[in-house]
Amino acid sequence: MTPADAARLDAADPLAFARERFDLPDGVIYLDGNSLGALSRATPERMARAVRNEWGERLIASWNEAGWVDLPQRLGERIGRLVGAERGSVVVADSTSVNVFKLAASALRQNTPRRVILAEADDFPTDVYVLQGLGRLTGAELRLVARDAIEPALTEEVAVVVLTHVHFRTGAIHDMARLSARAASVGALSVWDLSHSAGALQVRLDADGADFAVGCGYKYLNGGPGAPAFLYVAARHQSAFQNPLSGWFGHAEPFAFAQDYAPVAGAARGLAGTPPILSMIALEQGLATFDGVDMAAARAKAMRLTQLFLDLALDRCGGFDLQAACPLDPAARGAQVSLRHPRGFAIVQALIADGVVGDFRGPDVLRFGFAPLYVGYADVVEAVGRLHRVLTEERWRDPRFSIRAAVT
Image (cartoon, rainbow, N blue to C red; front, side):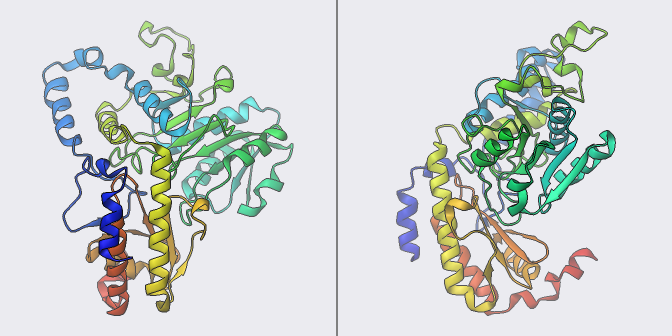
């Protein structure tokens, strides 16, 4: 694969139009969209208008005039189209962690008298922390099992299983349809974390039988740092869903100011307090970058990008103790490549200094995300060339790039 070959692939890319929707720094190859998505070109002006005109001039009238009041539902419909959910099943609210708590708590209550929460031991730590807290609060038992033990651990004791669809460190994908069906066969409910899936994979929540799901707004959805998250409640569960954080925006008549709580219909009962409007406006611009994007095409491109990067990296840099830490089959991994090296942290820092932005996950994993809307084939070829240069010239030996230097 030569630079000319890569340029031809980029020229023929059916998603090439989407790259122009992003404001990417010159000279930087950004492979960290699985941690923080790139800035939409439309976001700064839209945010300025929201602050200057909607808030500054129209003040409180903008709740109705500018449509602030129903932003959680409107954005939920946009996300629903990306994750295969029917209308009314997705709402934007709070953070991923808060939504994990809401959905797992509701599933636990719905499945009384069962008291077991099942999760993957090596899952994203904050999800496990939330479930540990839920267990302490309710007296439920949290069972953490290895990835290959999840299916046999789904027994009739389990009330709810909480799983991340794409593993944050390795990029390995769980079979959502199979595990959701397995959970249903024993009467358990499933909660799926789509933080590394939404916007990068072709997710089919309804078709794959998911019961509940959460996801992140600031990774592949490009909503900005700390963007609000979303939650999904399958239509068959919406009448039974009980938000443990029942707040006024989840009320059927929030401005009636009634004494008692009466939940609104649909997933919108997952709302609690007043939504963060400016953050939601930024997320709306991030979601607009998906207008006209076929998620099947996005998934196909991400698989080609990751395979090209992995093949080139192992071919050109395999002699430097670099090993794959992700599935070799592109269909079995998300839109990321994970590599393993004993000096992984220093190598990532040296790469960032050379204009290739990836990230590091302990103990030794170099992680690269390939957002299909703005990463191209030429980026991949150039990124591997810079990786080879960093390794060949041993730039990672620079004391600035040691973990000790980073923490002190």
